[in-house]
Image (cartoon, rainbow, N blue to C red; front, side):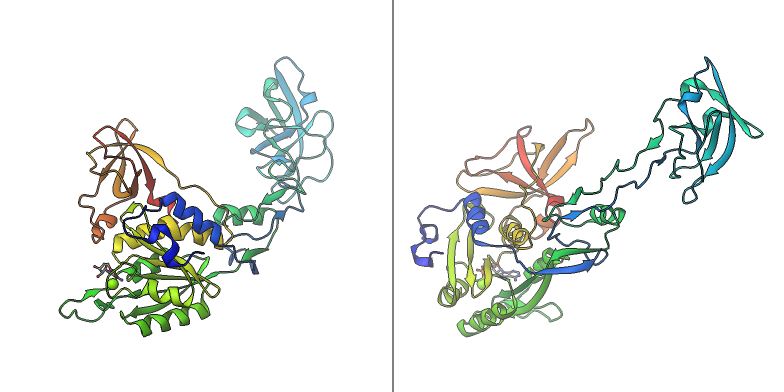
Length: 419
Ligand code: AMP
Ligand code: MG
């Protein structure tokens, strides 16, 4: 990594680093943790699978009925109009019929029950006329294979059911349960330490004195980091003093794979984050071609990856979602995916000057005709947290864009994509 002073994107007046370039550099520099844990399925929910899972059984394990009805032999149903069969037993889910059915016979069968030997089709009970121990039905209902679920139709023995890198959600854990897997290998949790820097910051629970504000960024970070793949360490508020910042970094580097700070990465007089880290580790300071969130420090401190996020609350969140989240996904061993961007029509004019990519906070909604439209949450200052709280998406406006007019198409990233 280049030291601060040699990176062109760090120098005021020089070119800015594009969001895409920044993300590429970051993703090249970070690596997945290699340590693995073996967990029971329940404990593995939300974690990232580390090794492939291969099924050792067929699912379903046996041919069974998809309906409540009667299992019959289609070759017995060749009469022009009606079949008339003798009911010789029953097969319930978990209680199969012992034996084989032969010419002129059928059995009562329930959904999920084993298809008896000899039978190849199921007649729905609604299509049957029962009469003592016999049934009659229209022969054209007896199509071979109808309402039968075959062994291995869902998963075959030997199939890879899940690949490494997948996040284990409810669907994945139930799929694993269906093949009888009770334990899986997942990557270990990422250890992430974070703190806020700023002499003006006060933790909630204390009254504000003159010039002070509440530290909200640690709550944004705590919320954005609350995931099964992450173990968080909140180091509190660190004052704008060289020694204090230095100590906080050393302490974080001892426990964390990833260190996040907010504030102190501008070029103000009390901004010690970049400077101190330049001394202790390898630090890049970039001026990003984005709004909000121009300054970003990124680097390495001992074995930990470091991100110094800007202090303004919206800048900190936008920067987290655009850069830190992809890095966390990679470090957790999760398969990378591109952001989910959906096209929507502007319901209002969007103001923007060319030069920096903007992440305006938007409200995406479905119009009566089914199309998607987006409006902004109003004032877009990077200090206005309400511009985030009213939003349900980011409107991505590219560097060269000079704004958009009502009816123009824009790309929108729903907040649903940011988990
Ligand atoms: P800085 O990046 O330290 O220059 O801070 C930029 C702006 O963000 C200033 O107005 C700070 O007061 C504000 N700020 C910095 N850290 C926080 C925080 N943790 N919570 C809320 N606002 C903050
Ligand atoms: Mg500050």
